[in-house]
Length: 113
Image 1: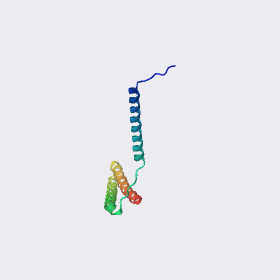
Image 2: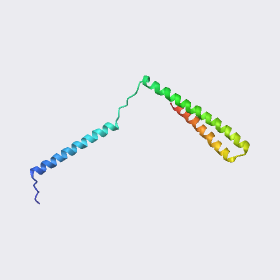
Image 3: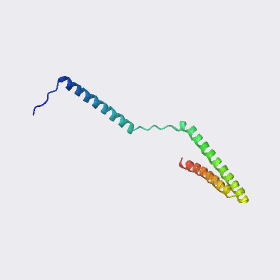
Image 4: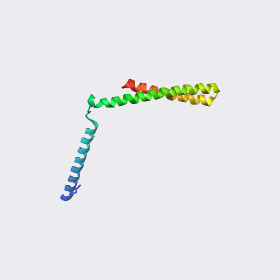
């Protein structure tokens, strides 16, 4: 079997192609490594204090609204029970559950932070 001898121009083209391909592969692997291993930056407490205050206010507002919705649902249920309105009772129970969820979520978020 005879080897096929390629021209020098074709060898240079192939060589250049593989060099570029190897360079692109190296660049992509370095970029992937940099993205997979991030360095964490932590903020000092001076910068986090306003955010923590805002978080506390938001949790308090949600808890207060949840209590108001809970009380409203209780009053609505009492009125529906007195009128013997089953649809109103179901609606009131949903309102009570919604208020309970709001209070529960705000308590859970404040406990986790």
